Amino acid sequence: MRIASRGLLVLAAVLAAGYPWMVPNYYLVYAGALTVMYAAMATSWNILGGFTGYVSIGHSAFFGLGAYGTGLMVTRWDLPWTAALPASALLVTAFAVLVGIAAVRVRGASFVIVSIALVSMTNLVVQGWRSLTGGSTGLQVPSPFPGLHRGQGHIVFFYLFLALLALALLSWWFIGRSRFGAGLRAIREDEDKAESLGVPTAALKVAAFALSALFVALAGGLYALWFGSLDPIFVFSILTSSYMVLMSLLGGVRHLFGPLLGALIIAPAGEYFLIALGETQIHLTATGVLLVLVVLFMPEGIIARLAGRRAGAPSIPEESAGQRLQGVAR
Amino acid sequence: MTSLRTEGLTKAFGGVLAVDGATVEIRDGGINGLIGPNGSGKTTFFNLITGMIRPDSGRVSYRGRDITRHSPHRVAQAGIGRTFQLCRIFPRLSVLENMLVAVRRTRLRELLAGLHDRGEVERARHWLRRMGIDHLERAEARDLSYGQQKLLELAAVLMAEPELVLLDEPAGGVNPALIDRLVTLVRDLNAEGHTFLVVEHNMDMVMGMCDHVIVFDRGAPIAEGPPSIVRSDPRVLEAYLGV
Image (cartoon, rainbow over all chains, first blue to last red; front, side, top):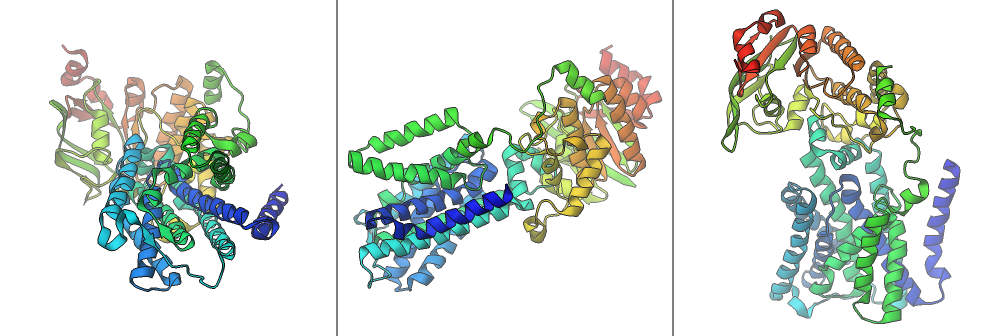
């Protein structure tokens, strides 16, 4: 079983690496790169959402800040993109630490609302600060690979996003098997109880929040270099965060590959609807409906559904109250 | 040696004084009972000690160190473990994971180390065996019966190696056979060096198990001493019977 799943992993990695050479046209390479970008962001979102249960709809703020940070450093300071991308991502992470210290003090619905406010605020600031960002007229970022034509650019960015996805998956896996991850899962289950067992919950939550912002900011930076044109309304969009949430929930937040699986379904579906229906708002409605359906019927996601609700645990038959008490007394 | 000491600890919720200038001293090594009528402030007192809520005034010190207003995880790391009135475990973690979450220190290296460290797992299995639930180590905690969950909660608290263990109604909602087992466990653990402070309504259990009993009424201690003396104290009878 272990060998089989490891083989499957290698096969998936090979298929992913070969994807740009297997598809007939550059449009499909573009769609693939977009899908991998979303997969990386959803996996990154899941470092916070999956482990701690804190649902952030504010992660597009980090996407937007990463994009604008990289774009501004390249255009205004003439930094090479290889420096601008990590520098802006680190700045966004530092910003996320500050935001996190304030934001993770509230739980549940309050946290969701605070995270929404974060997107709205960053959006307004970037739109309003015309002298720096260009405001709603947008920011043009020169291509980092001027020698390549558009299609070849898609191939390069496909691999860059793939590397980011690998990095995000590796981080999630590493956290998942560490004491840090166990602390985060304990927070999801019962935060006060975790505190009483000596888990420094506030520090762990801020760390998870910042780490999950880091990869989203990197995705934003790559996006800026890839698309070459930034519009605050689009990059600071609640919709981008909602996609991260939806993909993670659909695939399964408790599994390493859950968000990736969700992205593989949702991102191509979104592109398909865009082509089939044109630039209408129907894909928004479809996204909303899908989110409702997932929450209602598959709250644990596809992977949990496929694996059986409690795989791995010995089956404990339903007992009557009396039997339970006897079991205790034994 | 003084284990835990509170001085003039006070907490009001709105106009209600839940804990009212409580000065209590717990010595190292005993099994201490904390009793009192409903609403006399026992659980609030627990929450004030462990940092779950902050006192309006007064001080808490543990082994000579001031821990007033420390956050709960720092109180836990100082060596005070606690259980909750309504048993609290991590329902969707496995029994073993429930055990491994407890931490006495937070160093970055330890945080990034693997959860299933061999030594830690061995220690966890040791406590699970003592509670008699080691055969369930891979089950999800929510699949355990209520009594088993209570044992798991206590086992997880002991994983953090506390010198002082606060038990909030350990006998609540469990059957008599398990109560006997809990009493034996507490006695054994006490003999091994753990100090206990137990809030309990089951008088037989308190009087039979504790060597020192503190009686709370209206947010402050009104009497304390060995069970035999406390039992016949007129102030205690008045508090309980309202005569």
